[in-house]
Amino acid sequence: MLVDAGFLSIIPPIVAIVLALLTKEVVFALLAGVFSGTIIYSALAGLGPFGVLSTTVTIMIDKVGSNADMILFLCFLGVLVILITKAGGARAYGEWASSKLKNRKSVLFATALLGIFFSIDDYFHCLAVGTIMRPVTDRSKISREKLAYQIDAIGAPLCVIMPISSWAASVISYFPEDGSVSGMQTFIQAIPLNLYAMLSIFMVLFLSFKKKSEFGPMLVADKLAAKGIFSSPEGDVTEDDLSSFEKENQNGRVCDLVIPIVVLIVSCVLCMLYVGGLFSGEGLSIMEAFGNTVAATALALGAFCSLVFTFIYYLCRRVLTFKELFGGISQGVCTMVPACIILTFAWTIASVCRDYLGTGEFVAHVVATSGIPVIILAPIIFIIAALLSFATGTAWGTFGILIPIIISICSVAAPSMTITCLSATLAGSVFGDHCSPISDTTILSSTGSQCNHLKHVGTQIPYAVIVAVCCAIGYVVAGVTNGLGQAASTGIALVVAIVILTVILLIAPKVWKYTPEQQEIINSVED
Image 1 (cartoon, rainbow, N blue to C red):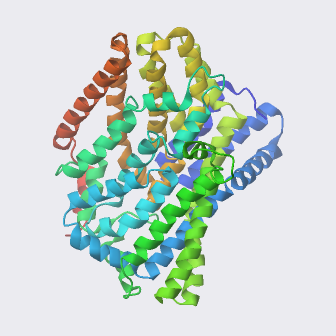
Image 2: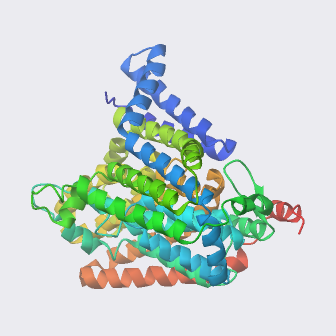
Image 3: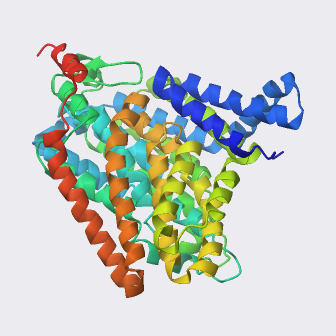
């Protein structure tokens, strides 16, 4: 199956990313990237013209089949969102939150706190936080681009430093089985030096509390939202279009949103433990069960359980009729169709790059044979991991490619740099995943916030790049101070990176204002 494509292996992700940015049509861009990859593979494997179509369809079938649990989870969650809206739960919560959260600062901080609460899994986080907070942020005239950024910047960065999360289980699974490196112990030691995760969370909280903190494309989105213009997957919508949920059941209460969501959380956590074997009688610990679980399967099962509960609960509460409940199924599934299409193509191009062309192996070989000096090993690894994750759209795939290589390199060349280099690998992978328009978590963040996907990517990248620059500087400092010991090196690098980021965040709003084109867009909207 795998062919040695060499430098040609990086063409599909480049095609997808460039076309996405140029055409603003992410489905077309992904499909073009898939076809460019299967054309290269078919040519090298001697399959002929029909091999291009055959390979493309085969991969899509395989990816849809292997990710059916994730698609089911999305559909179940879409149905749950529709039912909550129909029952009046979203309306009631919006009214309650508007009375309690009096300003932009409190709404953004509440969104961040909710994101921390949902940090057990990034998919779950992206969709659940968006579902709950979108009516509130819309009413507060906070742009959906800002909501999507907060969801994305809290989601994966927090998951990758949480010992009890699907991400931790994934990372630990890539560690060698020979006992040379202790998975969980090393993971915990690497948390403070995972600079991208730490700084992303710091930046979200900083921007939440500071007034007039937006800059660049996000500032334009912020100004448009203040004038009642919001981004949506179908195009910009006005403030009047957002009031549709007010026409729903007026008898709905806050409990009609909170109880189904709480049941969803509890169900998903219990199902993750169940799928992981906690209740199998084998004596597994909670940590071992999280390590063994299949997150997407558990989330689909948990969402289905919560959906069954919600049907019964709403019938007992008499906020929805039997006909309305089952009518919400098709509506809910339809809301998730665009996300499922994009995810299918994103999974397909990731498979083409990883399983057919060896994009990861090519990049990893370049890293391993480059003769990088030890003192700058961590920042170089951070950059390579970011590029690989950005190109393939998957942080988890990047973990699997680079972690074994980094451990091997450090065990021979720089044992004292193992923790630092592993931290850089995780940080770079999350940064690349955070910025990539073909990343599933980036797609789900825009889906959860009901924001136009490419607008989310365009407004988020400047913020993410600023954090990444501070991270790279921090890893240089970590390399220079490595001789002082791991604890001292980590502390110095983290403090330096945070100080630099704080200075930039204070200066950027004053110097990064509108371009003439952006000013025209804002002026074209009547107050």
